Length: 74
Image (cartoon, helix red, strand yellow):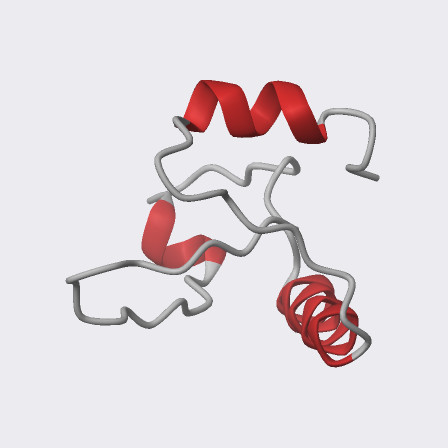
């Protein structure tokens, strides 16, 4: 997971949206289950604690950042 700071912006919450809230009568198997979602959040938090993060350099564009880090992303 890529984590980049949001400068001059308020932080925002990321939450789980149940399947029923995103689709009326159809089930989309491409969506994560609630358990998978929270497991991914926990894994990402552990990576941050371990220092496994990538930062954008000052004045670096998103394209430049993605090119520079393409070999580092799992």
